[in-house]
Length: 340
Figure 1 (cartoon, rainbow, N blue to C red):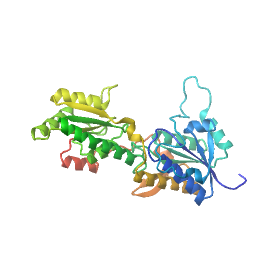
Figure 2: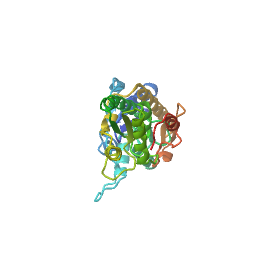
Figure 3: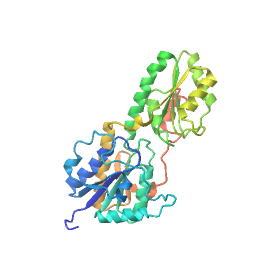
Figure 4: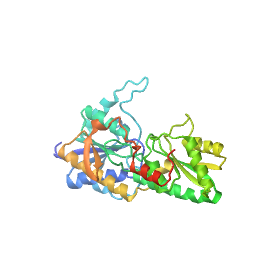
């Protein structure tokens, strides 16, 4: 590069969540203002690198986006290392060629587990890559928390709060299903925050007899309604939602009127919480700092409220799940919450 400036690309991949724009802003503004770098936004995840969908971004382009949900760059679940049947093109090679054509010195990949796995593979292909962990599921290995999680917990907790009034009015059992894939972080945190009476997590085995006994005992002692918070990833029959499966079982086994709610994509939408804006900004700023120091092949992480980094090679293919001895589970049990 004739200017001597470092030129970086930023992309967001995988599912959207609140805080991505705050991270883009954190990377871009720090890169431009603090380090004098050139910044390019890559559209629609890794497919944007395949198709050369890159736009030069100035500092003013990054203003006014910290409050906005989703991602201004767009996203996709395109997997460059997945070979589809009958496919002949070498996608990683094309991405590497386009990375070079754009004159990039580094690529920042904002995403969850799949994105960080791809980021590591691209690093092995010779790209200078920095990862930023985002997902509402909070299941990225190597960091204490991902941005997007706090906002999702806020949304889920508000939904549980609202179910309390309906459950009490009709003296019903209300079952609410929350997202998280194989991890129960959203369900655990919002279940405790929202005063859930039963909380079912993928990481803990549960017995429906225990669940039903708990609900009937509550009814016997003058507690006419109950809130059951279930994670989408709990063990259940195929092609059945967690809420539907648990709700129908409860009604059949107890005779208690039971209703189900699946909160779904609402948990991923809207404006990020202040905590997520701050965390995403911190992650983004540190990503720019790592690029300035040439510390590639790493993912930004939070450890004991200190921003640091971990090797991407350590992150891919692992999940950060709820420990059965987690303090919130112990606290919940000591207050009579049933975990099945």
